[in-house]
Amino acid sequence: MLFKKLALALVLLLFVVGLANILLTQALTDQSYQSGTQQLHRNLAADLAQQLPLASINGGLDLASIGQAFEIAKSINPGIELYVVDSDGRVASISPDGQQIARDSIAMEPLLQFLAGDSMYPLVGGDPLGSGEEMPFSVAPLSASEPYQHYLYAVLQSDASDQMVRQQRFETWQTLSVMALIGSLALGLPLGLWLLYPFSRRVLRLTEAVESFRSTDLAELDRAPVVDPKSIKHRDEIARLETSFNAMSQDILNQYQSLQRQDNLRREMVANVSHDLRTPLTALHGYVERLSEHYETLDDDERKHFLSISLRHSARLGNLITDLFELSRLDASEVTISKEPFALAELVQDVLHRFALRASKAGVDLRLENTCSSTQVNGDIGLIERAISNLIDNAIDYSSSGQSVVIQIGAENEHILIRVIDHGKGIAAEHLPLLFERYYRAEPKLGGDKHAGLGLAITKRILALHDQAIHVRSVLGRGTTFEFALPLQSGAAATPTQ
Image (tube, rainbow, N blue to C red):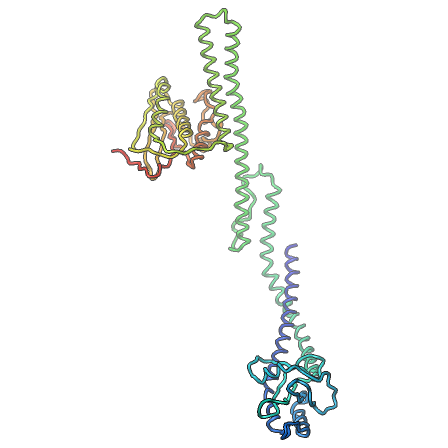
């Protein structure tokens, strides 16, 4: 369909261009003919006025000489018409051929321009015998000095001769025009169609790829239908469109597959969160119910034991709900960070003090290694504290008794680098790309029921709000390192300590 439309448009274009060329060429030819005629006979009137005494001694007209001049001019060129006009443009005398003039005066402005010699040819003037169309002419005054009373005015193309010339030219141009039009269609149309066909074919190929992509179920695709890159051999707009479509279709498929993974994680999250919420709720309900029903028969130690377990489960439930609420707020962009300068080493030291007792009970050596003399950074101190706490909490949970968790602070370019290093079991390489996905746990049993896989997702989102990324490296059996950076406070220098 596109090729047919292009072919029709090409035919119309060739026809219009051919017709315009014919009309333009004919107009230029007429103008050239008039210009040539006028330049060839430019001095005709002056020569006749000089050779024949057309004016009498007293300034009047010598009709005998005028008649003789008219006969000489007619013998030279029968198409020439001679007139004597006065200074106002009125026709005082005409060629004695018995013809009736159509108008008895002509405009003097073209005649004066001709005599001044500062005009471009052809310069046309009125034709007393004509129907109003102007013709090239020659003119000369009939006296030797100004003011001129009369002028010899020669129309170089009479109306009759002009009609005959025009008729001959029209017949010639009609033949040439038809031949030129047929020739342009015979030669230009096949050549144009040959040039247009590859473009229309490429557009058709791209259209087929788009329709195929639109009608294909993305869930069944491993790779989006695209235009074969090997067939893109040009560097024009169609090639750019083909390349852009290839990239766009693959991006759409990648996004669809990412949404599928997110949906699978969401389903898994619902199951995990349901389990994580149900377990402490069931335990809490069971111990409270037993305490309520058997309160009188239980001794003080049993009551305290049941209350302790209930408190532990309620705290666990509260932490889980808090994490879910905070992650929802971070994802919904409801958190507005408030950046301020603060000493990162002091903040990390405060967090370590908070985890010191828990690490001691777990038999984990928790320590800070700071190689910077100044750790002034810009950031939201509350959110950064939460991010560091999540990483240390995660590191302690996945470490065994006798192992260590090290927090390293060092300088790198215009940033302070923070590493949280544990020497636990490590994480398999296939789990690392998904480690920061919400609700994802590489090894759920290792962390017990305490974690729902939200801490790392929260940490990643907090750092994203600070325009920073978090990276992880892990070796099975040797431990895991989490690493991120924060920009130095403007004007501060993180000089390494000796």
